[in-house]
Image (cartoon, rainbow, N blue to C red; front, side, top):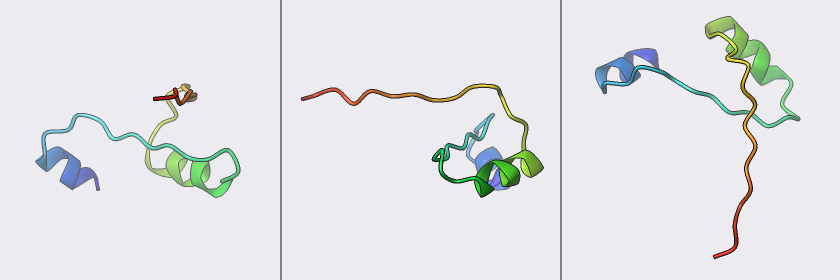
Length: 46
């Protein structure tokens, strides 16, 4: 994944995971650093 990102000119790779997915942060911690940010969103009506 990192090689593909670099080959396509990316400077960063981001992951999002659902709060119920306890395994994902352990994987992400092993391959990247936690930025400290948590993403929230509000879907607006059309």
